[in-house]
Image 1 (cartoon, rainbow, N blue to C red):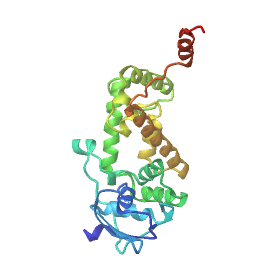
Image 2: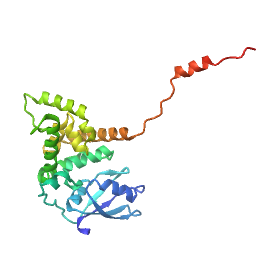
Image 3: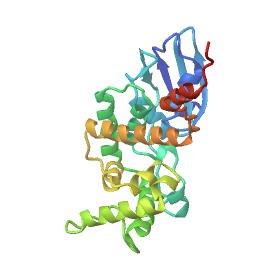
Image 4: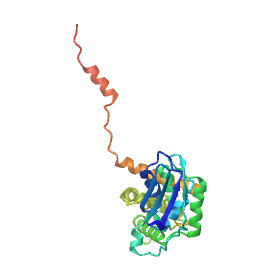
Length: 257
């Protein structure tokens, strides 16, 4: 357990263990947290080394208005993501995701990460590459959605210059008819099914990006969360129109003196 751990200091007095868990769970599955509230420090134990490596990326991040110091005595490395079969295509863990994507999730949730942290995420992705498991997952989604929206053997990301406009319009029309992006199971399938599908796929499959690209992806994720929350919220009762109230008042008989 201790092998995949990071040490966190500079924790705000208002921060609870639940806050720490919510913050670091974006990195991957947490096994345990040793929290010393009085000293403002904690040790986060992760299930995977790759999750600990992502946590180190967050050194200098902000939680509850305090700047965190995230360090480790161990040099954590990513695991080999060799699976490319059916299981890899349908089951993605948080630690499988590109670091730039994880950083975008932090921003979408409202956490504050400096551009230096975002550039650190991009640097890790550039050196490490995108995991084969995650690429297999997106490729499967890409072809599945493309077949539904554009026809057999089509992919959302397949962009022939002469037909990309028509393909986008056709994908949008099919989505409006079948509601595929609304019924899709997760953010990635909904995003790929949207007219922005090609751009989303490029963000998660290439390492050539800038901090601004992460901010843009964060806005897309936040908009997705907002839309999901709005659709899940119960409809508010409709108030009677003011005109109708006034009419009733005017129709009430008045006794003569």
